[in-house]
Image 1: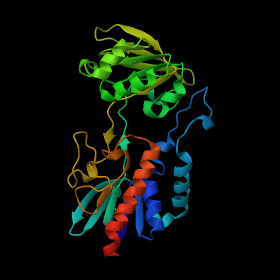
Image 2: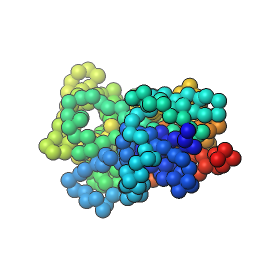
Image 3: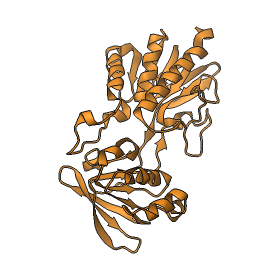
Image 4: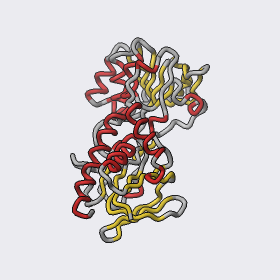
Length: 301
């Protein structure tokens, strides 16, 4: 029986686990990897590492600590979580069964992908999934945003403040009717290709060209030094979907203390309804969740 099990090994999960160790809790982190989304970093031919604030140094410090403390980690995905009285039973993909008095869910999200030729080849080499993280690197560059909803709209708006030009591909008419959509439609450096779809990503070492098909079937080539796939994120919340409240996007609803509606279950990072999918935000949310879990556990220790 553990005091605390942390599910997820990204920035939020790593931080939560290290904080729990320093509080002398009997803690176990369960994850398929260490580092989560920080294992993927956008490479661009004109950018040096020192020009990017990634929060990677903080995450790597925590990752190194857990790589050394093997007793505090179990490298396997979680399949299911059930409540049994005052304890929680965690089942892993390999059939392992573990128990804890409290949980922190920090499982992050999955990116929706285009599933077109060239996408896998150029992931994080001129093509990525977060304009919010990388927009400042594209000053006076040609860019493209692919997506049909609000996420694509916000991403294009952020890029339009610095980029030479933004092609917004696939946006729906509903999104275009919003105030932000109307603003982008008037922007001189934004071209909106409503209802279009990307059929292929091309490049030489780095993604530099998109093949795009219109609703009528005609194709065109678009030059882009940076391509951002901005479709809705899919929260990895299925293992607790029957236990805690989720919002309409499937994210775990938490309060300002990282608490869910069920006592003993806390959540942190991108899997929650907290603001902004950023590494440093996730680090802070992981620390908060761990401190809240410690306070919850104190009477039970």
